[in-house]
Amino acid sequence: MKNNKLMKWATTWPVIIYSFLLIVLPLVYIFIISFFQSDSYGGMNVTFTLKNYLMLFDLVYIKVFLKSFLIGGLTTLICILIAYPFSLCLRRQSEKVQSLCMILVIIPFLTNSLIRTYGWIVLLRKEGVVNSFLKSIGLIEESISFMYNDFGIVVGLVYTLLPFMILPIYGAVSKLNNSVLEASRDLGANGIQTFFRVIVPETMSGVVSGILMVFIPAIGYFFISDILGGGKLMLIGNLIKNQFLTARNWPFGAATSIFLIIITLVLVKLYKKTGGNMDDLGGI
Image 1 (cartoon, one colour):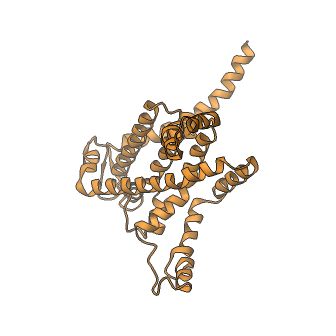
Image 2: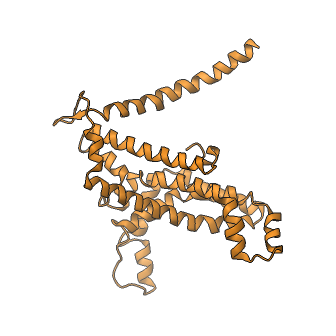
């Protein structure tokens, strides 16, 4: 009995210490300095203030938040429109084909996302592969600007985050009961009715999981906006990065980070209220 308790403590404490040192302490530090004041030299005055949080309601930053939510929502919608049909089609294939396709979905994770984002420059720049191909088939005469705008950012975000939408949706779709689908057809429902009244409700947990796993990173991936957007579009992630590295206003950067964390917690709470299982989020 004592040996079992010792083994339990021996396996639990390393996790507790790891979580405390690398997760809890940094978050507590960020929360504390969010109430400090920034001085003119990039330092911090240990003086309590709510100014950093009040600044979040400035019209300039509200526009940043709204733009971030718009880009994140558009990215999430496009990922759903791609991932859902893909998962439904994949479900009808043999197990060998399904395994192969899922390996292909996961393979990009073996390469750093920053490197893969730089790869899109070769494709989307004015002298890139896409423009060269469109010119060669006569669709365009002058190069189209696919980069340094909202389009380039959304393309980069969709490419990077699409696997996070496919995995939970495919997991939900693969669990569909064939007998339920057959019963729907036997009762006279056509394909569209079966999809909206049976398939969508049965797979909604996977869709909501995918939404959380795509939307939250989409508003925080600052490097995609910097590379494919040319730094012209400010998202929440870019705002936080600039406050820490460029403006040297750590207290305001910390307050913005806390704001982003609150958004994440609210979305996760709403997900749990709808009956979602945290295990479906893959540890988000």
